[in-house]
Image (cartoon, one colour):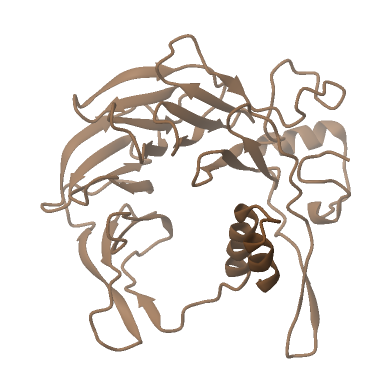
Length: 338
């Protein structure tokens, strides 16, 4: 680390290099906090959490049991060891509780007096934090997988929503209605994210293996579709459309500065994209991890092999039987480039 500081002070290195190195160091040094615990409220899996950015004090959680919990993360005990308490809960006894699994919860970016939740019960609810009652309920025809509000928007109050439908829904908080539909995907929309740099730019991911980037002010369609092969047709499949992954795209995240977009898919790949032009940066995130410890052992770690989807099982059956090989041992980069 001292080498990075010296190089930056001498003007030999970009300051961004030091920031990335320190961020990487901190991530690799993460461990379980033994001084802090969180109240266990959910009776089933916790699907989603969100911490408000105004104070960084309150956390939302949504579970497969349909329950929503608000936690206070501040330590008021005066002791190093403490438990983060639940300050309020939308539990099973509430008449307003979601009937099925809560998939996404998000604080309103500019005020902790409101938050939004979406669920497999085909609804998205806008909540008043003080009363724990819905101020608005949006109904959809299919399961709601995700929603997202822009963290920077000042000229619009849109919530992007991904559902079992192929169309991305845009709901307006001010009018309480669905005002726009974005058409382009051929499968269910699993993830949506607004750019933290440009308030009208939206990225969406789908079961059709595609990631589309939109300017929601345009009605003509998406700006571009991410192509894992960067236009190299010799490495692309016979299909005419660009694909970001060889499988469902189930995760999206912009970097803090909005310059890059990170995606994950059921092909067990993670890719980093230039958000301005949609180019695959071809970053290799590696496959095997080795660790050494005080127990004198060196351990090799690999991802858990994901069970095939129904569609993939059908494809495998057509192509004949294949030996089961952990993808981590295949000689392929995360970008599928040699």
